[in-house]
Image (tube, rainbow, N blue to C red; front, side, top):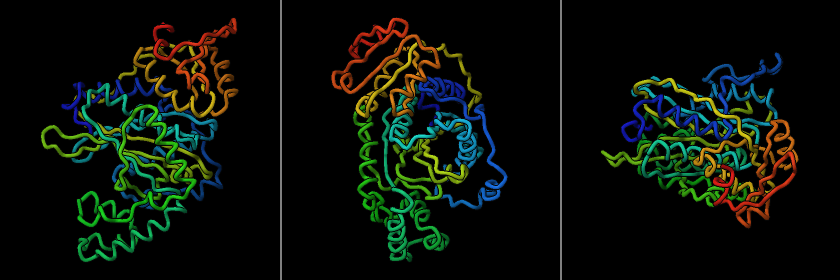
Length: 386
């Protein structure tokens, strides 16, 4: 949880206002304002009826149930995918508010990378000091079966050291039991089997593609086998952002998330790729965020090819800091889809980065009315556009 005393914000509302402004620069929209469509009656009969049908390994997973349900209903009206944000209030021992960011509709690693880049920008703007990003990968449901079975076998060998109240869970839900042992600092937890060792070759390639986005952006990370969650909710990547408490020196988790295809697909009755991150902040002072009106961007940023796509996040962050609003469609793979979207929006200028531009660290600035264009070095782009 983010403690406001460790930020430059005086209230929760100040923090949320700043964070939402950053998210909306990247194209995130309020999830609760998006149009939804209910599934037909026949499909609704098989829908999960209550939270009791799910196994929760972490307390952060409970709010995700309602968010996944809503995202699934939005998929039917936005089949091309969407970016959304939502705030969730918690009334636990310490009241808090979580800002959830969702990227729905793409299986590409750009989804997780974008969430982490935006979260990092939010933390920077808040003045949160030294942070650590921990990443794990539990693979698909099929590939993780052997991992979970071996976790169960491992826990049986250490059953005498596990508290009697937790022992039944080691049989019913080995992964959830392991998460509990990790949170309690049990000495057997660090030696447990590691999920990344069970990934298939295809899943490893997909995982390294995700990490390459972070390396190109210059976002440091650490692989950690102890970042885990329930298989009812997660598949593939899981991540956690933590900072140190300046008073105690202890580790404080300020954000957690991952790819949650399993849970959203259950509500959508079809496979839906989705990733999210939840940034948790204590509730103090005013808690209702202000949303300043954004100007309509006059430019559209388009990418062509995987190399350009990997570098786009860095360029977008540079433009955000320069307060230059742009449209983008990183969820689209094809340049034709992006140009069509730019035409639909009526953008007078299109910024294009292809493979050649990515290698030369330039961006093409095209004026739609005259179809003239100029290659501009990325470092000079903010000044040129202004």
